[in-house]
Image (tube, rainbow, N blue to C red; front, side):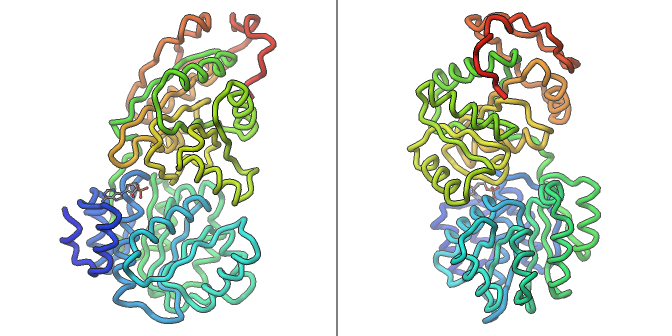
Amino acid sequence: MRFTEFNFHPNLLEGIEASNYENATPVQEQVIPPIMAGKDVIASAQTGTGKTAAFLLPVMNGLLSNHVDGKVGALIIVPTRELAIQISQHMEGLSYFSNLSSIAIYGGNDAQSFVAEKKALQMGADIIVCTPGRMIAHLNMGYVNMKGLQYLVLDEADRMLDMGFQDDINKILQTLPAKRQNLLFSATMPQKIRQLAKKILHEPVEINIAISKPPEKIIQKAYVVYEPQKLPLIKKLLKETPYKNALIFCSRKQTVKQLTRELKHGGFTIAEIHSDLEQNERESVLSAFTAGRIPVLVATDILSRGIDIDTIDLVINYDVPGDGEDYVHRIGRTARAEADGAAFTLIGEKEQNKFAAIEQLLEKEVEKAPVPAEFGAAPQYNPRHRTGGNRNPQRKFYKGRPKSR
Ligand code: AMP
């Protein structure tokens, strides 16, 4: 379906064209018409499907004809500042030819930003994208004016509940006018999301796009290794795999820091990103990565959702993520839009049962690639392996190497 068929405002169509979108993605095709018809919508769609534009476009279109001076038109609540920034950048592109005002409100900004945010919340802005915590900080000051709000969007709602934002969301909801259009997007639909939906949405249209599976075009491989084999293997993979931008995920920030140090010593041009970095540091690392000045980035799961960089063609999981959703989100950072991508996972001996659970969820067995002989014997894949014990024949060989965690 072409965007010209949606009956969008001409200025918005120009923005769509400038963003180089021609045809609507499946989620856009299904979600845009009911939103334009004024219906509440609950949609399960993972990142990479075009879900952001699926709600931004009809909301922007509605506000182009129903802009009200001095009011907030739409409030988009998201779990992380990275996602808030990304959505507002997305919106800047699409609204290039429209005169819609917007602001992203998220934690970690300087005092000047707080003043600009306060002004938008008092004086109105067409679209506000916010993280729950930062919004609560403003709400507590007593000046937030949400009268006249037309749209509420909850994006990555499952992630918000996982991060413990339920109470903050409830508090924000209390400040909103009862009459408004509600849109809820979530990668997964666990019971707690259904309960939240029941509370917020009115006779919603339900759309199921994603079954939380990674795009087929991502080449997935896994290596079953002893923990000390991970570092030499990752170096080899980085040396021998062609890539433009590689993103390495570790579950803990200590691991991110240590691995970054090791790889720097190994001569790689590399940077790290995790919650210990200030907001401006994170932004400058991300822009150096996007611009290709730093080809390899090591990150915690802070980057596993929502970050959308077209040039990421290699994702390496230094460890097995906590659950299937995290795995799908991590590897979904590659093969964005039309590009291809590869995702390698290093499965430590003790992580095998965790990976088996992920395979079960994906209903797919990920190819186990042989560990190069130069690293010595590797464990046989055993999905039921939990403890690992002290049976690692490589332990002595690698003694003295820095621990990976
Ligand atoms: P999202 O699922 O919102 O994270 O979007 C994933 C990527 O697809 C982003 O780079 C978008 O800019 C891009 N995108 C969204 N809609 C379209 C479309 N209709 N045609 C081409 N690319 C799109």
